Length: 188
Image 1 (cartoon, rainbow, N blue to C red):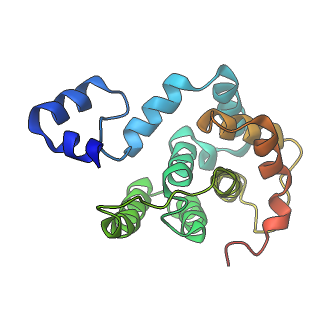
Image 2: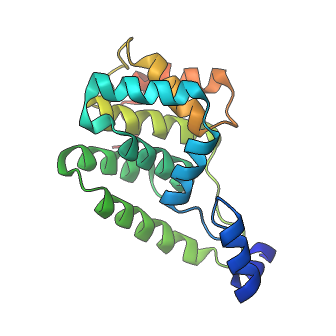
């Protein structure tokens, strides 16, 4: 609540937005999220991203991968996970990143209005990792629900997801990738 009030103050809010790479007190927008990930991600993230794009082509380009990671990190707990997976599926076909960002922002804003003066729901880290892995598999590799991650793609996905979720330990990320096939009915 205090951050929201500080962010609403004209001078304090402006200075905060200009000084902070995350954009200040507001919700982290897609461009700020991308900048933060690119600045803080380990080298293994960049290598994995390049290798994934080389192996799977345009659906694995960095802008799209970052969109799925952004939606997973900020949307799980607010937006139904199946909506994030559906966005990844649509993005693979339509290649329209702007419309998917707009749909996500609209859905998230509708939920956040309900929590204007109280604690908003926060998704569990494990759920965020699962949705990130499943969204990337749907977008980049084109896997159907319930299909396991190909052996060649597993280390790349682990490095990419770990680069976006630095707070997650290696075991959680590995489990999210390894258990993908077991989540066949999670988004129906």
